[in-house]
Length: 115
Image (cartoon, rainbow, N blue to C red):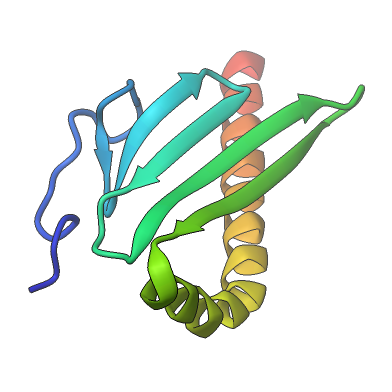
């Protein structure tokens, strides 16, 4: 019960490479500072990915996140119909937390350089 994700550690807490586990996901593709594609390893009726991309936008960057789900049969369609409304709450909160962490990391690096 629970499946992949429970009690799985990370190789390094602040570095990723293709093949690394991240909770219930596995890093499938990685372009540092530009794109991260995670494939679901949880039990779902279909195949699922999370994709995160950043695009240079002059004085900052644009962050995009996308959920991709390819349902398998009627069960997969019912699953997606049930969980997709929750993404309206989950994804904005996730984006906000990622942006907050990125800003903090950027400010911490600037403080280190100013010393």
